[in-house]
Length: 83
Image 1 (spheres, rainbow, N blue to C red):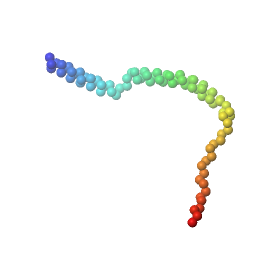
Image 2 (cartoon, rainbow, N blue to C red):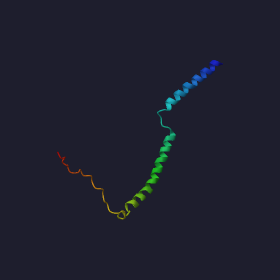
Image 3 (tube, rainbow, N blue to C red):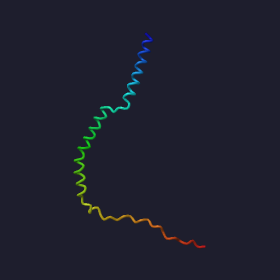
Image 4 (cartoon, rainbow, N blue to C red):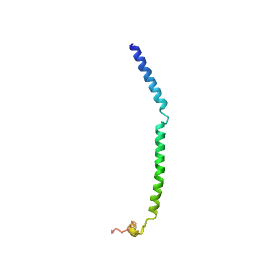
């Protein structure tokens, strides 16, 4: 009886190992279904995103003040050192 338990346990471990290694490189159906749902969600947002982008392009930018860039840093003139 004790030998039967060892044989069953050993066969279970071997079958588990073989099953896990055979499924390691394959994509699951769940991952594929999840990817399709994400793609569908992005397609739905695309229509709304285009409307928002169009409104942003039509926004009046003259009410933000004039463009005044910061002055560029200029190297000061060389100063002679007195002897």
